[in-house]
Image (tube, rainbow, N blue to C red; front, top):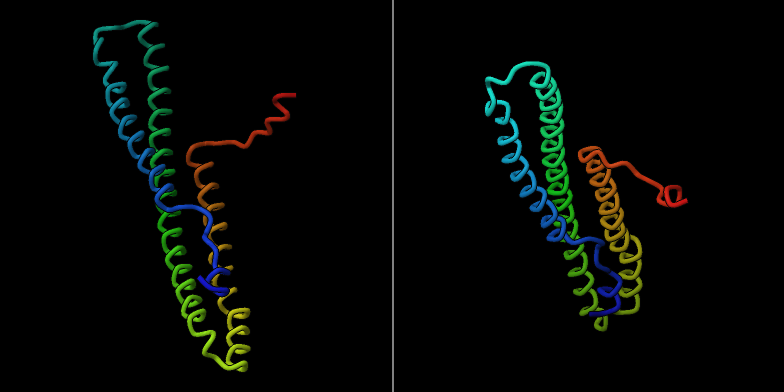
Length: 167
């Protein structure tokens, strides 16, 4: 590459890695859906069971069923967030590749330009090309932060200061 194309770096993150995590969550959701179906049918296995112990079981079972459904829903919401982030990352990666191609074209034309044309192109790189690239870098960071926030909500993740825990 040349001096201009070399100035266009790679974006942080890889869409295929994000999609792989989303697929893992989709598999986990399917597994938990199946487990939930089995769990939901448990009370029917002892339909003649009555009394205080049956009532206590029904109370605990109902609460656990609700928690399991919330977990499945959260995992699916997390998967959807990762898919959205991967799509945004793919689009931004494509845009940066287009910027790199424009820079490579400029690199190949550079030696044939007059000093005035070179000065004009340097100004264009400083004013436009660099801004476009930085726009996508900043966008990926925003997209990643948004995805992380959505994952924290969907999966009920709370930040913990490990130094406070470890003492």
